[in-house]
Length: 209
Image (cartoon, rainbow, N blue to C red; front, top):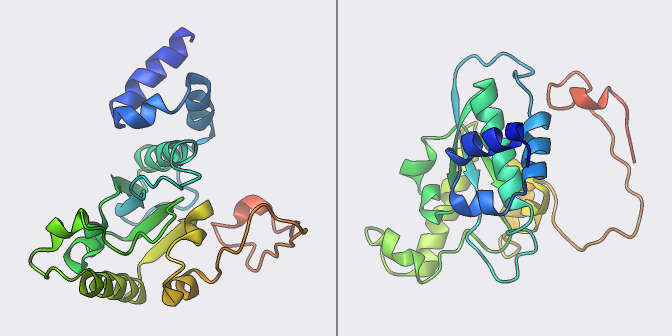
């Protein structure tokens, strides 16, 4: 590791949990840091608060160890560097209660796979004020997210986040698609509907496959 990489790891390490840093090699840190933009594509009208949602560890998760820490770092750095948003990272499903969600302008579902909207037995201690029935708590969390989106807030479903909550049809409707398999066995065309939109400007108005 050279001196610049050492300094960068030290600085970024102050902002991230140790487990995340431990899973990102110095060369990967350098590549992520170099790729993150220094300014926002559109000047923010005000500072937003964005929830970076990482699902709790699941034994069958294909992405927890080797991609979630990397994309978490990228989303953190984008917010901190561009000042477009304040990134808040969590894997606590209680964040989806109405009083907590209303603090955020948007959510990034960072490779958030599995049925994460359903609390586990371990989670239920956080919902004592609601009750002890997991089904009832899940229903409240579902409606909370749907109401929050309907009120004008935004969701970014990143990569395998589309494979989450397969037991919840409204979640799939919310994202506009559902996971069906991997790897792809056919070529897929992507059409740029609005080339002037800031989120699509990087593609230069060109469709691709």
